[in-house]
Length: 341
Ligand SMILES: NC(=O)c1ccc[n+]([C@@H]2O[C@H](COP(=O)([O-])OP(=O)(O)OC[C@H]3O[C@@H](n4cnc5c(N)ncnc54)[C@H](O)[C@@H]3O)[C@@H](O)[C@H]2O)c1
Image 1 (cartoon, helix red, strand yellow):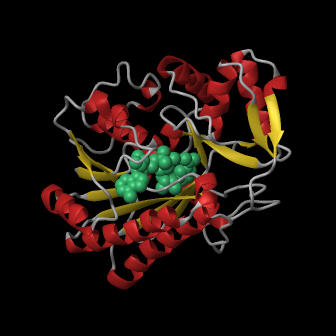
Image 2 (cartoon, rainbow, N blue to C red):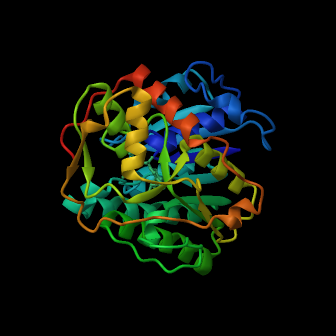
């Protein structure tokens, strides 16, 4: 099976490329993915080849894929999904059996500063990919979406049938891309699946996001900015569990279905930060409350019983995943991002 992964140099995409090639492409996990033994065993398909297409924006890190470079089952293409010629060439040369579409502008704060790149990459870029997927008869188009398209919920959990109600330019652009993907199934019969996942955490995330920022600043003894009262609730899923869920969905029909993916581990931001501080052995007094993010969603919560009824469940408890994530950032020690709260 030949799989084109867009955004494979980013956080979840890079973990997914590693995950696929360790499980199905005979690339040893040895040092790059110490968590791999939890996911080993019983892959349903063999001989996977991956082509990664990534524009290497500030969020993309080519080095994340370096351990795969010496293996012929992986090829990296530096290119922008907004460029129809690049995308056409990649699909023509690759003839992928499947496309897994991660590439996106993904940081809510950046989208509040300026939404333009979010619309061009997340909406226009997705349209460019869909056009090419139709031209080359891609048999499986998996669109990686987010719980943020539903907006905030005070009580209960969103099912897949809940209407879109995004709050930020980021989530609005992801909702736009969702709609385009689903429209291509209805209008042209393109075989698509949409997954909407809750907050991921784990290795390889850009240092500007909440958890890496907390870990790196705590280790350096620096103040940790927390929006508002810190009581915004997010549901946390270890990134490799998300990768496993996407792999699981691959074996389900690509009939336009939407699957929520949840960790069922809802935690207020301040509690998560305190847990990290405790694990690292730093005082909770490092927390510094700052002016709340504009339009900050209070709580995200997904009902993922549709996916769980097909046999998927996460394998990593929050405490285990946090300890592994802290260990990874300690080993790789990326620079601290100073610019954002
Ligand atoms: N991080 C989360 O918690 C989370 C949760 C649910 C869904 N998602 C979704 O998962 C996907 C991946 O998220 P992430 O956190 O890994 O994002 P990320 O920002 O870490 O990575 C995005 C990747 O896409 C690439 N990219 C950006 N614009 C591009 C373009 N125009 N052409 C080609 N490549 C481009 C970047 O270089 C980067 O490698 C996104 O679609 C996001 O909406 C993320």
